[in-house]
Structure formats: structure tokens, C-alpha cells
Image (cartoon, rainbow, N blue to C red; front, side, top):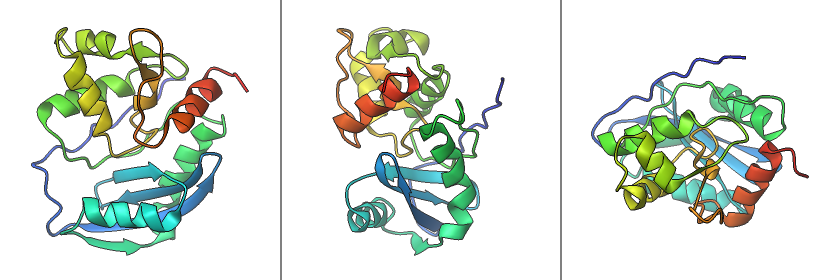
Length: 183
């Protein structure tokens, strides 16, 4: 099944004047926070404590208006949860992301990695036409604010080791194993 992917909106990083709504949801990976603007999802995070997720969101978008509104973001959360539960292989939701042009290229390449497949940071650097930029690719992965939607969990070290993951290495392993059908 082919699913179209909507491009992320690119702008200079700033949250000033933005109205961000968020919701908190329970998933197999623990609490999940999904946040977005009228343009699309701007933040998806997993953690152990809901209060910590909210604090991280508020800090990331300190000059924005941030308000809990589970209902407004519920459809986006449902799409993300469907993939976590093995009911969907792609997440097709609008994104509203701040990032450099390099980060945007990396994030676009990440969204092209098929469900259940892995790439090394080096392979991703080659895919974007910058074969010597593996470390910069790793940095762009680390700056990804939308867990699972931009699947940075599908990128591993050249040795096959999982490498780091902003939302915890155990969550990264779970996502990789889940997508590969390994219980």
C-alpha cells in the first residue's frame, strides 16, 4: 500500500506567537505526548512521566502558547498508535517542524526508510548526497522532535549496534523489534 507523505513546513526556528495544543496518551512505549499547531504535528515524545513530557514541551516552545487539548490532537495520536500496535506501516500526518535545510533533508530521508528496515548513519549520509556527513546525520536524528513519525529509530551504527535514541535505547530496541516482527 502506498501512502503519500506530506512535506514538513520549514521556517526559521521560533515558537513566538504559535498556538500549540497537546494531548497525553497511553501506549505500549509508555506515556506519549503529541503536540501540534494548525499546520500539523510539531512534537511527539515518549517518557516515563507525563509531567516531565509536558515540561519538556513547554521548554522546547517557551515563547509559544501551549495548552492541553487531547481532543484536537487525538486523530494524530491515533495514527501514531496504529503503527505502534502493528495496524499500520506508515504514518501520514501533516508536520510543522522547525529545522535547518540539512535537518529537513535528513528527516525527509528518514521518512523514506521502509517500515521494518534499518540504515546506518553513513548510509543515510550517502542517501542525502553527503557521504562524509555521518556525524551531522546523527546530530539531525538527535534533534528530531517527532518520535516515530520521523523514524530515527530505524538508523543504527555501522556496526549494527542501535546507537542512541532521544526517548531511550529500550524504546528504540522495542520499535526495531516490533517492526521486524520480533516479540
